[in-house]
Amino acid sequence: MATRLEAHAVTGGVFVNGTYPDIDALYRTQAAELNRAKREAILHKLQQIVQKRAIYAPIWQLAFINAVGPRVAESGFGLIAGFPYTAPYEDLTLKDS
Figure (cartoon, rainbow, N blue to C red):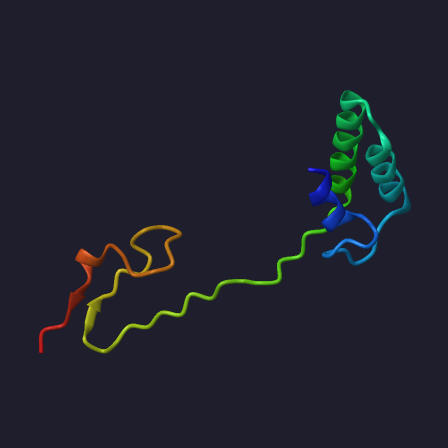
């Protein structure tokens, strides 16, 4: 747990872009603590602080690119609510030529 916090939330961490001084101080405190119960309590407090201050920004949105050709009578899009593909495949029908 502590090693993951260091990489993601403490100054100098590999994935860190800006930090908080109180998080850095708590991390140093837990690193010096020898009592396992106290160290665990400090780590839980660190987790709570990081969770409250975390900013989630979606950077990727999947675009389901689908197409239906002129020979398709019933594509199957929308037959299953929320499913982005044409399904069920067995219900796909073709036009008579």
